Length: 113
Length: 118
Image 1 (cartoon, helix red, strand yellow):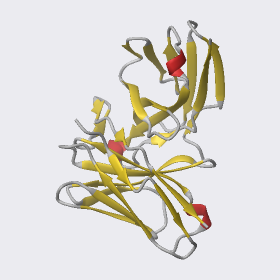
Image 2 (cartoon, chains in turn green, purple; image 1 turned 180 degrees about the vertical axis):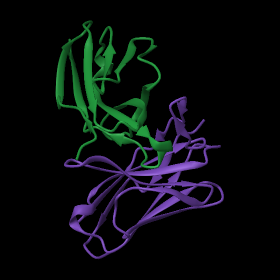
Image 3 (cartoon, chains in turn yellow, brown; image 1 turned 120 degrees about the vertical axis):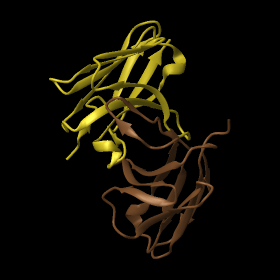
Image 4 (cartoon, rainbow over the protein chains, first blue to last red; image 1 turned 90 degrees about the vertical axis):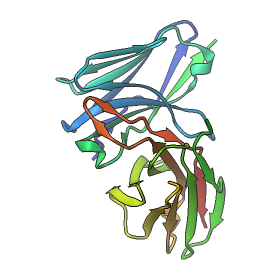
């Protein structure tokens, strides 16, 4: 049973526009959420995170929103740039990290010129 | 600071063989976690080592094992390889592997080892 779901396998956005990547989770024990970005032939790279005690975290062009009641988080990238084209993974952790990071299956973001 | 390194980058084995993968964490990081990535299952947690002890373990059979050395370097071993073990194996390091609502040590990933089982 998938505890972290990214329902959009791919997303295409025009350069300069906003990219919104979504993620849903089912496990109420998750207390920290992270977004990773992955280029082909490389390992995932940490992008931004948010604690369950917050509802928003911002870092430059990247903002993550958390809606605990809906068990939903989203990553906003504004403005989108060609270098943002990659696979984005949503990850969650809880229970002191006993089960490691639980990842979604990723969303392939394509930024079109 | 050098990143997480994994060796080898690519490996081809046959069913029934065993394999050992190596991971060198970022200097100063004491927690090393291993993940398996497959197209069907995505990224799944294998286990985590801290101070030479396995601290956490995912839902994988006993054929998957690991160890950590005093310099925090870690190895992962898979015995009696099966076709389904073909995957990208990723190693991640963090300073202490602590996690909670007030903060989580960020895990930094290596490039992975691509294992193909024929």
